[in-house]
Structure formats: C-alpha cells, structure tokens
Length: 145
Image (cartoon, rainbow, N blue to C red; front, side):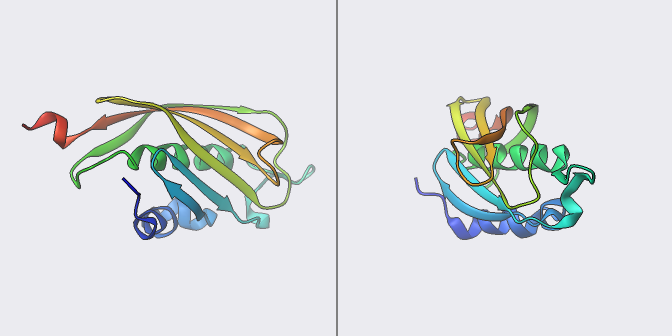
C-alpha cells in the first residue's frame, strides 16, 4: 500500500499544533518509513551558549516520525496508534541548522509496532541522535471479524 502523501503532510504539518509551532515539514512517506525536516529557527535552541538544538525538539521529531511510520501500516480510519515508549540517545549536539529525522518500522505486529529513528543535519552517515519507539496499535481489521 502506498501512503497518501497529502494526508501525511496534513497530519505532520497542520493537524498537530505542536508540530506546527516547531515547523515540521514532511519530506517523504512510504510504507514503513517517514522522514521530515525541521527548518532551523532560533526559537529551537536549547543551549544559547553552544547554539545547539533543544533535545526536546529532537525527541518530538523522533516520536513524530516513529508514529507516522506506524500509521503507514494502518488500513482503516478507526485504527488507532499511541506511543508506549520512546528512547532517544543523543550522540552529538544538534547544530543551529536544518535537521532531518527519519523513522523506519523494525517490526509491525497486531498490537505493537517497533520503530528505529535517526536525526542528522546533512547526511545520515553523521547521526546526531538515534531512537527507538514502541507504539500500541488497535486495528479494526483484527478486532472485528
């Protein structure tokens, strides 16, 4: 199934008010994968001495792409997904520049979805943070029959 990009763009960029405040922009969506851009703006700085992106912005982006990747597996309007657990490891400071975050499904089950997320500036070979997300999923197609 190919994910409808316009739907995901609306969810990522418009539907969730906090995402809109941060300024998330959808880059790519396909089954089991979502990537987004966080355009740099000074309000995203967490440590003004180092001019590094706030860790909460990175964690929010990780949860957003992990959850959105999970949503690509949903088949029915009434299917639901929610975060159970999120882990973020910060490998180096996020610089005062645009940031990209990608989420990929590691395993999708009937009740739980596991994802891996990465954040980087210019190249996925230079990861500044990586994460794991666990999402509870309620699939209408598996509960009604």
